Length: 189
Length: 333
Image (cartoon, rainbow over all chains, first blue to last red; front, side, top):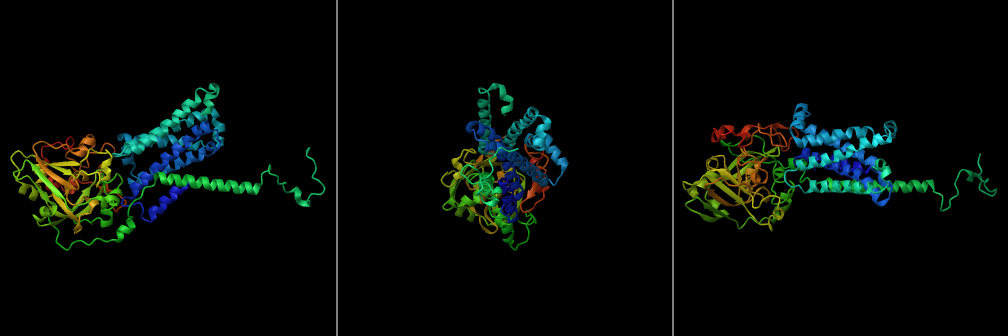
């Protein structure tokens, strides 16, 4: 629910002209940042649980992931709006510009994750396969950070910070998973 | 079916429905309130946190900006003017790339007060017969000031229409009396991290340097601006003296110039040094040559929601295309 506050503020900003002289560009930037931030938060849940033993991060993980997907879709829709929903232009962008390719691929990877976010899907796929599938989130978040890095004209500090956070989260997973209880490794993602 | 002891006889008749409240048993209502509070707090913290992390101030809003209608100076359009609608002053002065003040578009307007534009001197040197250091007021007093309404196309894909006030660069260069060795003009912006907080970060190689080939600089469209919309040029727009070369991407139009040097060799310009594969010395607006990360075929005029087609040389092809005859503008982009 809280994750919807930025969307509400964004809409309020847009209506009151607070997005500045180039509102579409600002909205694109903001939804993109929100997507990446939420994706990183959802991926922080497991390391946080591993480090602290708390269970609440695991309970909000799905909500965070779905919110990330929602903002990703919004980001994409605003991009399309920016290009007057011209699919030829979009295809050209996706095929020719690595920056767009990375972002678009990241979003596509999130689609099956969002579709299989129900308990029913977990049952149907089996926990192991479901877990495997949801490891796509690692690829998606990495591509998302790359997309952010390539999208910035000059100051690469914020994208590098996001990449560092992602790398730290991966490292915690890796360190926490390997030495302890190797038998249950696959299940401990 | 149940081994539970029956309630004691003296219990309240309807206590069968209620649970006896001891510290150990959860009270459903209290539990509900607790989780509601927890939920609200979490939601608030998450939403607020995300907001802090991702929202950036947009500067004066477009609605507000549209209210401040611009009054065009009552004068006939000159041969170099565009008749397109001028970008509202509030937007032209609040949406700026001027990394000396910061990386966000709203930073320049916010920080411009730290720039002291008087006293201000401009050094004129290099391949000239009369090298000198001249006060800005003296310099601009040399020439009758003209209005020029120019399109301005940023390499990022947005554009504005700017009502500059200033004088042709050619007039200044002729006054400097170039020697026969002069082939290029190099411009240097002020270097002073005290006035330009953005220069405390090594985002670009400071000071900002730009340049033109001498024939480009002598073209009547190349303009030195000291004012905007009939007023003194605001700091965020490059006070007190800036270049305006409307057929090139905006970053060529260097701001807050302190030095103009005529050179024999092509100057090493800031963005061409920072990312040579993305920004070149010429930087002529060219819809046919995409930026490596986005197309340059279209642009958004600030204040409009849709995009319009970008024109070769930003619509000034008729005037300037001759300067580049015989050059491959895909390679010298």
